[in-house]
Each structure stands twice: as structure tokens, then as C-alpha cells.
Length: 179
Image 1 (cartoon, helix red, strand yellow):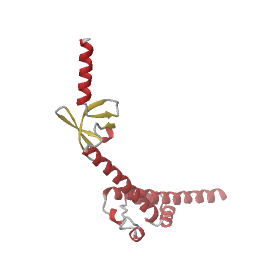
Image 2 (cartoon, one colour):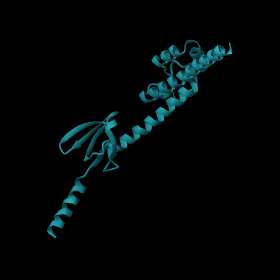
Image 3 (cartoon, helix red, strand yellow):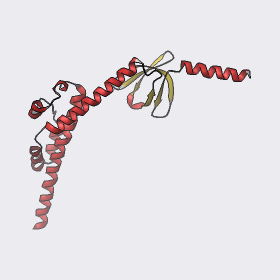
Image 4 (cartoon, helix red, strand yellow):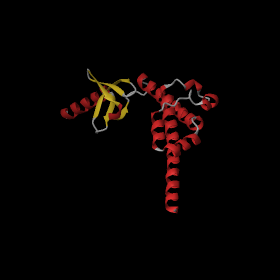
């Protein structure tokens, strides 16, 4: 009976002192405290030791207290990042670049046009239509918005160039086999 009491007391003590549960991608679990959440790193404290863990190695974090300031700030920044990223992607899709011009570049220069676009740095300021039509001008200096804008603009323009290059290849093959 004494052993059962000791086990129950130790189990209760562990639950009282248990903090945030961190689960890594390899399945290891740690009880400790999240100290900071940065862009790509989580600062995690176990007993008196601090560890910097890359976010890519983390499968999940279970916070002990959902009213924790760090947790609330993380949720706010995550929502802001998602909204800004979505706004950047949509602006690039709707307003950036002359797609027919990039189709023609792909038709005339093929992979060279795609490499040039991949090395370019599209921004809302360079897209005249984006500057005129976008309702998201407040985000033009936001890092997350710009990252998503550039990614979407490049992928769209490279897609148009690839379509132009494929068209050139099909026309060339058609002419070759027509003779």
C-alpha cells in the first residue's frame, strides 16, 4: 500500500511540474518550458538548460497554459503571416507581369527566358498594375508578403515561358514531321 501511495504521489508531482510538451520528428518527447519562438528556432528550457531547436525538427508543441503570452503571440503572428502571404500571392497572381509577353519570351528564348525570370526579383513596385490596383499597399514592405509575392510572380511567369517553349517545340516537331 505504501508503494502505491509513493507511485501516486510521484505521478501527481510530475503532472504538477510538467510544462510544455515538445515532440520531435523522430518521436522523442520532452517536458520543459518554451522560452521563445523565433522564425525558425524554438528556445526550449529543460530544468536549467536551454536548447535552441530548429522548427523543422519539431513535430508538435503542446502548451501547458493556453493563456501563455508566448503562445498567444505565436498565434497572432501565425495568423498575420498567413493573411499577408495570401495577400501577396493573390496580388502577384492578379496584377503582376505581362503573361503574354513572357509566353513570347519562352517561345523565342526557351529555357534562357525561364532562367532569367528565376534570377529576377519581382516586387509590387515593379508591377505597375499592382501599384495601381492592389488594396494591400500597407503590406508592400512586409517580409512575409514580399516572399509570397515573389514566389507566386516567378512561378506564374516561368509557367507562361514554359508554355511558350513547349508551343515552340510542338510547332517545330509538327513542321519537321509535315515535310
